[in-house]
Amino acid sequence: MQHTRTSNAWSVQAEVTINAPLARVWSVLVDLERYSEWNTFVPSMQSSFQVGSLLTMGVRMRKGIEVKSVETITAIEPHHLLAWKTRSPEWFLQGERFQIVTELDAHTTQYRTQEAFSGIFAPVIKILFGKDLQRGFSAVAHGLKERAESDAS
View 1: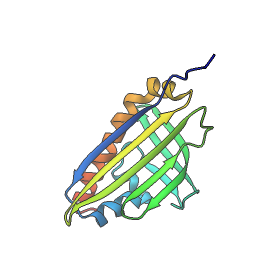
View 2 (view 1 turned 180 degrees about the horizontal axis):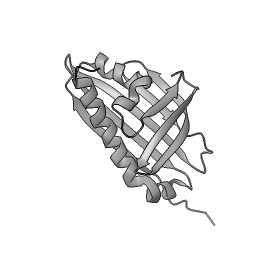
View 3 (view 1 turned 45 degrees about the vertical axis):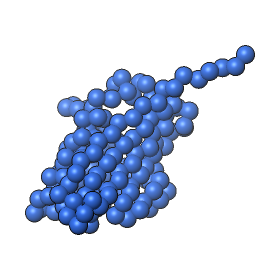
View 4 (view 1 turned 30 degrees about the vertical axis):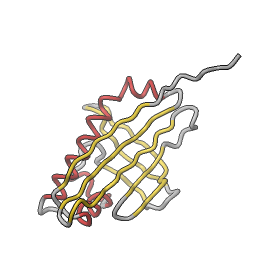
């Protein structure tokens, strides 16, 4: 008898068009020391930004619920891609976050972010924090847009 596995994968995503050059958008995205100035969802982030290194984030899921998340950097392509994944066993919870910036023209950049979750704990995360994660990803996209388009960056 063959066992059929039910898919419990799901994802969160957001995207925005930013009226700023790619280089400015990228510089805001990788300036971890200033995240608290524009990123209401992940106001603190520490990493050496080397593939294989750790990334420690302070995440505000919702009022009164802040979590510390430690992930592993999986990809860095300057002026294009940042990615990291969860550090738990894949069967339990696997999540990989991608942040992609694409130049549309000399003064316009598209920012896209997505994280796909799978594993036996993924449905629990969706129930507990799915709406918070979606709200947070949208807040990051719009915060990045505001910051990159402002004179403060």
